[in-house]
Length: 518
Picture 1 (cartoon, one colour):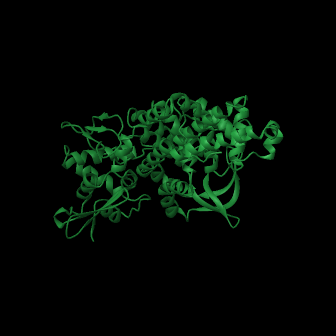
Picture 2: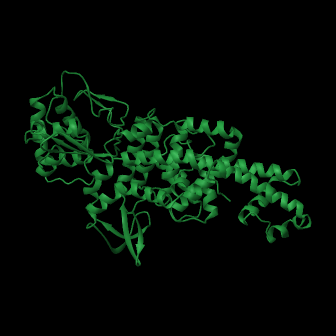
Picture 3: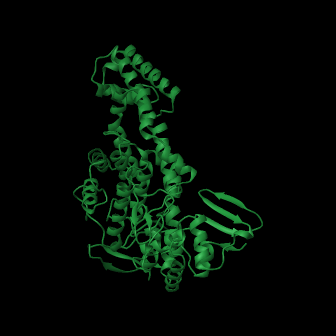
């Protein structure tokens, strides 16, 4: 079927964007819509076909097919486009779509069309706030356009207000926490925060397959407890370096923003496999500035959306020499804390939810691949492992990529719609399952303590050792436990009372949820 809109423009100007068009339109026999996850395929009857000109096809795209900044950035780099746009805005100086096209050209390229400016007419929005997450508007008098793009020219993530995103915007994290407090009590929830913070830290290391390093786990937990919501701008290089130093400790090889190439990958048959290539190091500071602009311009918008963009936007920029993954997941709680959705000292253990099951982990990898896979498919012939070179930050590298300039629009203008929808599911599961599971465990542990205290005087720390041992040993008193507490062998009735107390306390918890924690 004949293509129209962005697809027609892409074919006419030989442009193949990395990221797919959110809406793809064709001419057919009747009007139909086909949804594929958050992407749409639209079929229009012949009467909708635009003329085969830049003006008509771009008008159709801007009106019906969303705003695709990566494609527009590539389109506007074509020499013939500037002349065609200039003719269009001279012919229709007050036309809403001509003004938006002229504004977007100058915003994306930093250049200027040969045009005196718009003298009259109402202001129009750069983005329709019913269809996108937008930033606080700034009037552009030259085009009489309200610049409500959520980032800046160096980095501007797009979030489309699909049904899933509207649900994420309406999701009330604070209300869910109140429900937890109502069901389990404020004291119990606050008591769980220390363990939840450590749990989040441990799971974050598991995501990077670095579990079992208790000193690092405790250190990252301390950073989350101490630093969440504390920095005026978490994307400022100084703030990031401070976070990184706290996370890595004082024995890391290097700190700060990288000045060398980096890729994310794994090894297969002793050979490196590239899964993602990060932007050029000279672009990291400007892109971080775009993330800062996003946080500033979307202040007051749905916190969950802001947290998703902060986290995934940061991990795609990948600006640090080390610690990017942990910082990206730290940013989720950081944004929720600074936006007042999650009060101190609570930390949502989102990483624990991600690692809760093989399926959850696969979902996390899958959403990352929404961005990384198209990038690698496009540029898999542009990298190589060759001679080793020392970068200006002292890193010795043999990874060489020759398409940084061509790939920049793909990095700079990511569509993070799917990432927001994913994080909304993770946070709901965290609040509905992970945190309730922890509360049930603490509640059961407290019941077991109180029941044991009826027959045994002991500090809570010793009681917890006994309870944990009984549960880990199939509800039996182990020889190791008897060796540590000889009274349990000397007094079989006491030992039996302890076992029954543990069984009854945790059986009640299991009946009301899925607590299986040791």
